Length: 512
Image 1 (cartoon, rainbow, N blue to C red):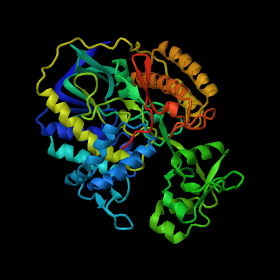
Image 2: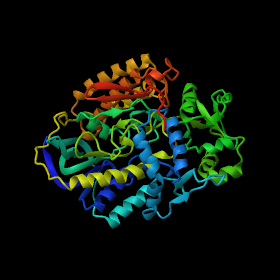
Image 3: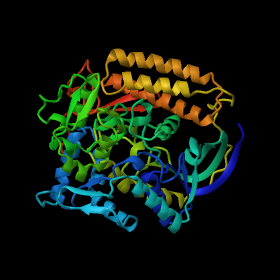
Image 4: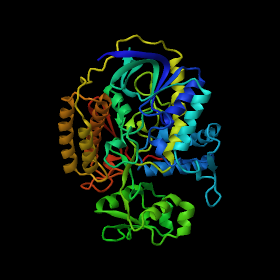
């Protein structure tokens, strides 16, 4: 296919969410010419736009940082990348406070109910990520010279002399090429690989798939966090967990409170609650014991749903929410490919087997600027490489609609590689993935974007399934019904690179 030249930049950022925008802003501060490539509109794409805007971070007090570190490592079931977690905790407070220069309405609360400075939180009121992402986009438009290319899908990273030199992108079935001295992948995670997800439909793992095609490694791809607090009917609404301290409960289709015998009831860890919901035929949110005055104050949108749909039960379905796995990076956001950097949910290792609530947006505030700064510094000593861009894996255009293949994949991943896994189901998944990949490669798609996304999702589905098969235990968000307990033989990470698997095993849970 003909690939047109689109321009050249010092730094090309792939992704229009918070990580990508923060990276682009920081790179521009170092004098780099910067372009943002985004599948959707920059500031209106990725999971950050549909977040609750909440940032949690540690106090600057060194002893309290240790407490935060221990909590994060414990939540990750002791397989977190400790170097990355140290960067997050050491820089979280300053990074979130720095956001006030862009987000003056960001509310910072540095005290918990006891007045102790360790439970730090920042959020926008109302708690909607869009109010943050849109303001950062406005800042870019008004105060920087960053070039933004919305509606472009990253296709393939180009290299010359073992370092990046550009990126092939797609828009409206046409291919274009951006020459770049360095590239930052901030394409988000891969939760859209599941039929049920709380993320946006651009979260198809494109950045990870591009990295894999360049021989780079991924880690922890079996760990996906499923969010149990979402009403899906008669309207979609995320439930704030504090409702369950005020009388709300979950019941199944038999009107049974199935969490009754659990110590924390509906406030159990998300992975436990998601599994118990998944086991039921249907689950509903019961608000009979929750006062109207409390709902009016703390959850008026939920109260409005109840009023607008009298007599209709509030059906709940857990959703794929956050992907802990992704590209392996160093603490400076560099990768094993010179000139390629990554930040945000596209990366893996930081959160281990499960992420603490509120850490995702703090991660964007910490690692986005780190990636931007180091990509800009790298570009200062480079020149543009002259190559002929090509992506031979792409198909010929035609009239085929491949959306059915994508739907089949997402449905299968939800059933076989989702909240509850088993060897039998995972082996069935591998067979389906092989069949769908063969089917896709025979098509001539009417939409090249749909084909690329589905191709990338199949690559990731294969890695996720194999990683889940290799981990013959249950740890964090990864649950095997045939191996329901943690096993110290798997106290480590599964790393995939160039078709091979490496198991990194720790002898004992790592000390902080």
